[in-house]
Each structure stands twice: as structure tokens, then as C-alpha cells.
Length: 83
Image (tube, rainbow, N blue to C red; front, side, top):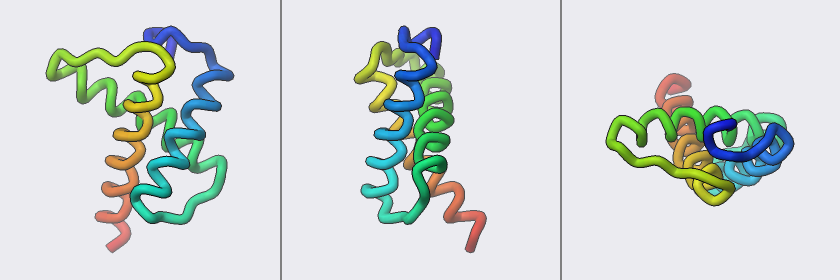
């Protein structure tokens, strides 16, 4: 989060939005806390994956995109283990 240039409060807000968007896109039903966690952890996962390919997303919009993509990946992985 420090590398993205945003603080902890902004990370929680953006993570919540990213998690909520992923929840709507993936048609899952999770709570607000889980949305925030998925958005924040998803952003970390997506940034790690994208950095392997040399892609760096910065700022609020980059964190939102990475959070959304990462949260979708985490929801898909969670669904694979539940079945």
C-alpha cells in the first residue's frame, strides 16, 4: 500500500469498493468486512502477479483495478476449494 502511494484509510475504502465490485461481478454474497479484506489482499496478490510481468499500477485507480482483479481471483480460488 505504501508503494501505491495511498494510506491505510484510503486502502480500506478503496479495498472495500474493489471487494464490493468483485462481489457483484462474481455474483457472490459476502459481508462488508470480507469485501474490504478481499479488496486489500486482492490488490496485494494482483500487484505481485502483475509485477512478474513488469506491469506496475500506482495511485488510487491502480489500487482499485488491482484490488478488483485480485479479489476476483481470490473468490474464484475460494470457490474451487469449496466444491
